[in-house]
Image (tube, rainbow, N blue to C red; front, side, top):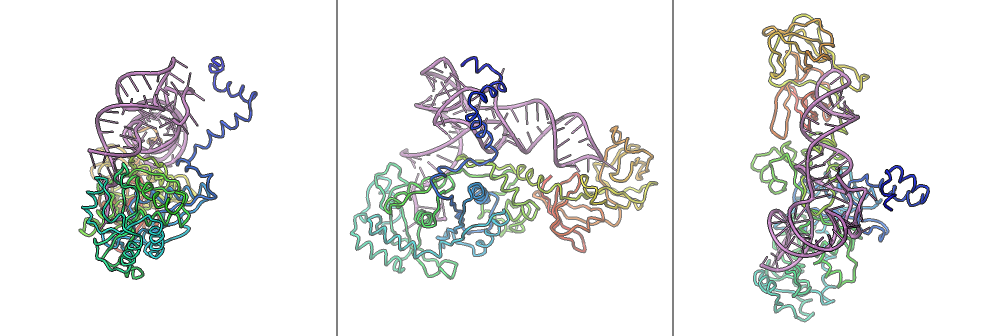
Length: 513
RNA sequence: GCUCCGUUGGUGUAGUCCGGCCAAUCAUCUUGCCCUCUCACGGCAAGGACCAGGGUUCGAAUCCCUGACGGAGCACCA
């Protein structure tokens, strides 16, 4: 044994190949399947096919953190040839009041990420289903109506004491639940509780509320007549079973949900799906909080121009900046599904996007805070290529004979030389630049830096919107030929998406370096 | 307070279930070099981590205990 261990790896492999070729193949196959970021889902073999769900609360467009769910279940869907349903859990018309525009905004966001739900459901369409199951649960002795005040019940529960309503007879419970459904009570007067275990060591699991009364009508006209609404744990638990969900992925804030819902599943004789919990995501590079309501407040207060403001950590913003959904998915899937909280580095999204757009992004010059110089001698214009790796795309034409503007940092000292990229080498002489007879060797030898530049006249004014605020500059004339929506690179500045060409100038959204 | 859960480089992640092949993987990041008419791309190299302390063991990132730190739930929110 010791002798074998001392052998170099290659030799060990050889020996093993002679002795046990099958086992070797197995070992090496295992080593190869580590090329995806996400861990395998648990117990996949026990199911005919993998079915997952995203259960968003439609309270606004999505921020970057929200994209994690479609990114992960979409990736699993592809891996396992499975499916997923998008189910809007819009069962609180008051404190989590749905925003009617958010339903479509969220579906748009999912499409942007590159996924298509196999089914879309709205919980607010399914109240009758929940009522039916509540009645079944009551009949099974699994629920009781309770008119305790919330605080009173909480005290009893924490002391592991049953409330006086717990042993009501079923007939009364049935009648009172019917009255709840009929809207006979006001908010706070009556709830339906699941009978779990009042002595359970975890107080969070004791006799939780399944249905409560809400006076505020639902914003959807289809659901505005209902007053008796299910709580998440009941609604979600029932729907997961009814829609055939095999794998639930959710946040650690719902760690206790499975344990709560299991009581209902047990009453119904259902099998609980596999569950994966993940931690919270934070995103670096933004000083705005990753919260829909905080973003909404900031927009309403005028601190952001809208959901797609480049300073907002939203998917709408990334899309406008020219970041592809695929890059967002790649970066989020790489976070895995661990239960600890994670930080998403925007640089990883940017790296993934750069990989996707670099080849297509034509190059242009943008000069910020340009300092003007007259140019003496040399050619009429410079002709840098549209893309350094694709000469066939042609070259740009940048006039030089009417003078040029340079960024202050690039202005050479008196008598020093710089190479105007795509044009010629110039030497500074006061506020003039004299073209020298140097060839490119002066750049190779390190005697002159290559810089970008723009003509003094005929440029396109550009407002570049970035997460850190707007930047102004002028782009070379050919930039006007780009199409809205194109992603181009302003050399030495970064990739941007062309957003608008107006008479008084263009607007671009900065994507990343 | 009660109940759960977690802790691998700056960030994320693999390895932890089934202890040795882990002086720890990959990506991102930072730095340097190469390539190049800058940038970007590409290539090469370097940097940087097993929360702490005990225990078990021939051997611990991996198992056990204690502690520290962090997170979550205990809602008529999702």
